[in-house]
Image (cartoon, rainbow, N blue to C red; front, side, top):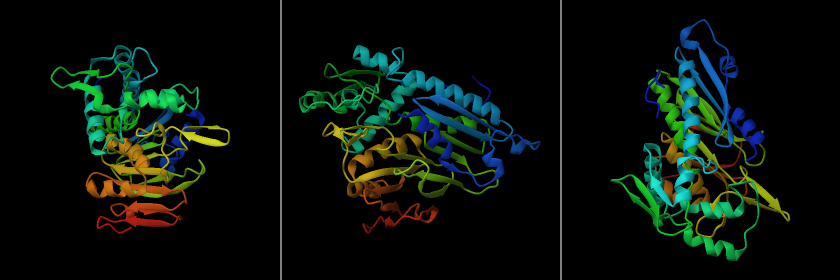
Length: 358
């Protein structure tokens, strides 16, 4: 793991999303590759393909280039560590061997995943991998599994059956055939790691866009808040609204991100672990806003599966940790009161309040 400054889907759609997710309002932001004579205004931006998506990392200030170099190294390191499709990765080896010893990163991710599993009553479940594989979302060889196949796999997809020994930092599974996947929080964890690297390098203004998973560091160079565009599920060149924010992750999940069509039906990749089928609880998009990128990533999927009412209940119980923007099937938006004043949209918008009113 890098410790300090100076130490060592449809991919085209993801690339488009990555370039469009942040609304930049000055010429300096629009051309992040340009460098000025003023050290404080120096900028460095880089496009990277990793974790099956196009990413852009940008930093401002005298150490911008070093920070971006280290960010790229960290992305590549974590991709090699966490990929389920790369046979030599730690996660792939754990899945192949039915267990193993965890590194510092995977220990952290496992503990966070199990916490989220408990907090969401099993909605967030890293043991869902066998079901994801049956649908073809792990390989791109899409198929609709039979009810019999799903019923046979559901017993293998319960994180309660993950056996974790904290003292030895080891993991095993209670049932043969179980596998894990940190894909539901990996990008959020990665953006958080990059934000840490930026701060260690003295970067006080930067943005991290990992295939539409946005995390901003500090404010813009002029001291104003970043303006993050929330992607519309209806059209990749349209937005639900603009969120003004600083030092936050802004992470969106929706069925539009990865899906296939068969016989006139769309089947998306957000699987409800209670049914083994794509979630269908009335939401088409969920955005989580939090200082914790790992949490934001995990909850964006979890609240999508929960549906509006349960998502609102969950937020009320954890409103000190995150805020959210929900879009339902009718195109109506629901925004929690913590960010209501910072979110601008032309869509019909309702405010979710802590007292239970919407």
